[in-house]
Length: 291
Ligand SMILES: NC(=O)c1ccc[n+]([C@@H]2O[C@H](COP(=O)([O-])OP(=O)(O)OC[C@H]3O[C@@H](n4cnc5c(N)ncnc54)[C@H](OP(=O)(O)O)[C@@H]3O)[C@@H](O)[C@H]2O)c1
Image 1: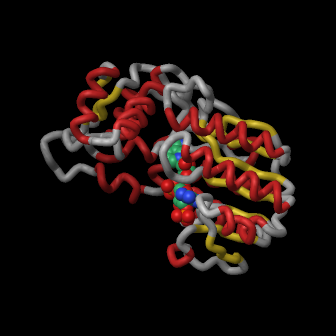
Image 2: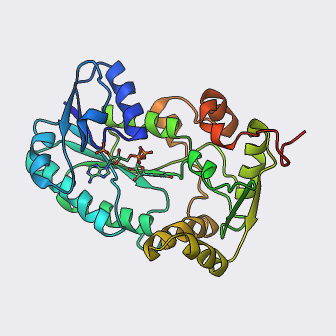
């Protein structure tokens, strides 16, 4: 029996569809079973990292589990993951696959990468055989960073990052859960792009003149503090760009090919396969459209 946690999430949902096609016995854990689509042959159980009692049932009789990072404040979130790893150890789970982040380190500029480093430490402390997949930032996430004027602002500098499609991240995670290799792996897209490169590359498929404007950490912090009252959320937004600027996501790996037998998609290939993802950014024939 394979277990996937956080079953209503986008990566998990896709990984579950892919695994269900291979005929593996599958259990899907979620906090909200009513939000999870029916999969033929998959069992859906209610489970929440914040409620350890629910994890006993979820992890029972499981040979390998894919633990998806949950939501929450950095630091507190790692404690939730610890609950999951400890429940897996108590249940005698044979292997845990943990979805982490490229650049995971106690010294990272990005608070969630520090949280992932702590989570990884909790996982290794259980002694369960494990595979850690350190996913690059998802390409889709950049779509939300463009403001209505077509500009993405942030202290990302000109440094490149090997950003990945959610589809390749899901394919890699499902392949690894079915056949875990062990160890810690960066899971990245095929090429490293700067934020200015990304803006240029998104311009053609959206029909808009999209741009990236680098700003200082201080100016980003000032700007975001006016939009967001929680200081830790401002730290997350600024740290996300700072991690890119520091080169934490620069390394390109061949993990997707090694795990799935298929090269990861570049930006154009990904969005031509899922054009609906670009819809919020598409030109409405306004002033910044590309002729
Ligand atoms: N690499 C990146 O750029 C990047 C970007 C965004 C997110 N991520 C991480 O990658 C993961 C997968 O991405 P995604 O796109 O699938 O994210 P997503 O759609 O936001 O899904 C995250 C899932 O985490 C689960 N979760 C939240 N709190 C939980 C808790 N207390 N106990 C158990 N499960 C909990 C939820 O599952 P249920 O609601 O079904 O319980 C949710 O569906 C995310 O969890 C996130 O940590 C990475």
